[in-house]
Amino acid sequence: MDIQSRVTAVIQSVTDKKLNGDEEESLFESGLLDSFALPDLVSGLEKEFGIKIPDSDLNPRKFESVSRISEYIESRM
Image 1 (cartoon, rainbow, N blue to C red):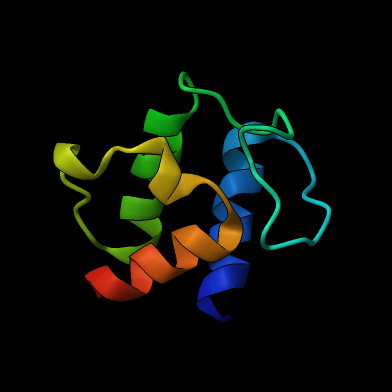
Image 2 (image 1 turned 180 degrees about the vertical axis):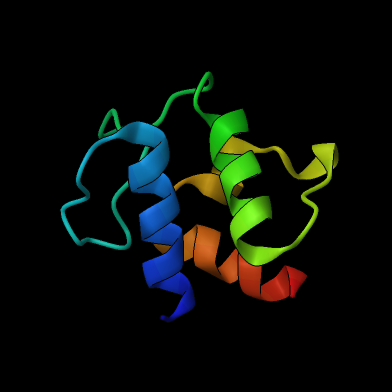
C-alpha cells in the first residue's frame, strides 16, 4: 500500500467519513477535519507510519490535504 492510500485510510478511520478521492481537496474546508480532530489524525499517522510528529509541526497547513500530508510523511521517513 502506498503512502497516500495509508494516509487516506487513517483519515477515514479518524473521521468515519469517506474521502472523494481528490488528493488536493482541503480536508478542513470540506468539513472532514477540524481543529479538534487534528490531534487524533496526528496520533493515527504516528502509529501508522512509526514516526513522531513534533508539536512545532502541528500546523493545519501541513495537514490541509491528502497530498500535503503524504509529502510531509515522506519528509519524516
